Image: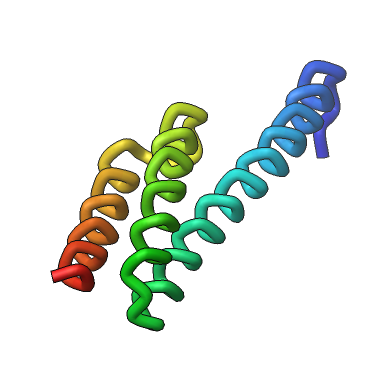
Length: 88
């Protein structure tokens, strides 16, 4: 348990930031899941629409420090590949 006032404040700040990051991560996962569902359903238009919404959301998470840049790029790349394969 934190003893000093500065350590107590740091604990409060970490808890707040953890909650924010958890929310952002959950939001990104939701957008990715929508793309995945459209892909499994075979709905080309819905998959493309969901992907075009998910991509900026992933990059926004990178700019906020929730995901590493390479992780988000890898996810976007793999999703784009699958959407492209579906439309071909």
